[in-house]
Length: 153
Image (cartoon, rainbow, N blue to C red):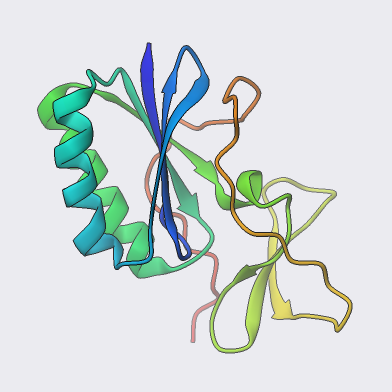
């Protein structure tokens, strides 16, 4: 089984190819999701027969999430490939994720569903996003729509 994982909510954009749940190829690019993702998928679809696509649908750059969703949903429908989604906190050790201005999305360690938007304390630990070596134990959702966590303005 060949699967691909897309983390587009920050720079660099990360894409991992997984064979039997193990990471076999990594792509990294500093460009815009709208420019980079189509070019990467041209190459990926030439090399691999994909069975499933995973992507991060919350929280992070709304534009990157929207672009990734529309692009990956289109690929999913046109190529009949299963699409699933996951929280970005699964790929940065549950550290805060840049939101808007000087605010960050902060996970609630007591509740998987609740995300706080706030300023960071000075001693807050930040971790970069990483593609996991194995994707066995991650919680992927059938609900692939982007999830927007910012309160109304």
